[in-house]
Image (cartoon, rainbow, N blue to C red; front, side, top):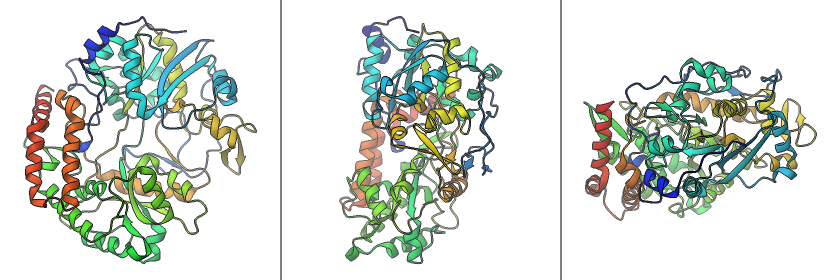
Length: 541
């Protein structure tokens, strides 16, 4: 077993600060970045790992954008084993991570987990916690001093991250920077921007868990829009407003959109101010300070007055909004792009059900829309000090084997005839497999993000088409990779201050003209301090 030498609770709390040690960073309105909690790259920073495409099959649809994902309309038939020998040599490896799924059967009752361990050549002891509880579990684990060999770190959620990494985890730079990563071909196939989350103070501290760079998406019930002769992709705000009004029929208890406050982010995109920070003549300006953002807020208020939002939308849960969308009570809802595949599953059995995504458009012909990106790699897997890096990195490489390889098939589907069977060209899990696959190996290490929906090529094509339309609108955030102590400490409060103000204006409790006062309060309560810290980090970079 690879174990870490203990570190005292006092040492941990001193490294993390006198608070609980973990703080959730606020969302875009508060000025968060997509990079790790670190200052600009230090002098003498190591190279990012050299990118080399992995050994997976060629996608059926290849993105024309460097940041886009390939799409597979069917499961590849030219499968092969990438590794000729297992990565472990009878070792026991412990890992602490998180999951968004229910708990899987334990190892002794989980033949799929047993098969993965056998193929890996040892025992992977996966300890996991629900995502919502993980920050507290992480803090308790670190303070306790008995670290497993590997730990998932949500890089934007930890105060004093550089100090923590140096105290508790192994610097992986000599193993992964530049061409050194080519010793691990699956890790070399991860995109460069994902590795930026693993770079802290110019060093590499973990292996990133990759996702699509696309964040929130305006999902649409394309079948409902078509039934009323409405366009799936409006060309400007006036046409968009007509679509929303055309979809709304209060007497039939049908509304266009689930919830108004989330819609403001989409409306900000139509004005080109979705990305939180903008560098204008070398000075950082937050989107909420721009006149365009206030105009987007006025548009949102006008839509609320038009009655296009579900009357119970404010304060509704994700489950409620998903139910409304599936049942056709609403025709549009905003949610993460990574969850695209869930919607057609929920819609199975509904006659004519067809969903898609609506990309932002320019508010008018003179405006270029933008999109704020999602977390390409918000989590890294770090190796505890005292655990042998040379033995663990091959396992992380093996767990990152790309989609379409036999290693991937084993991790995702298990054993043919026991946990899955082939239906035509597609692997389909049975009830045993659906349960046993819930061990979150994906949150330890995984290959590049791909688009694939088993047996639903039309869904995959729609997902790919939206990506190709939307990904070109991604705009970089100049604070990505920079650190602001104010943002880490006060981000949640700053976000709440703004979201509360947005809600008050949208619902008519305060006039749109009150927005500058709300922004001024944000500045005085920490917004200006965060700006100054980001500005200083930019100057030092």
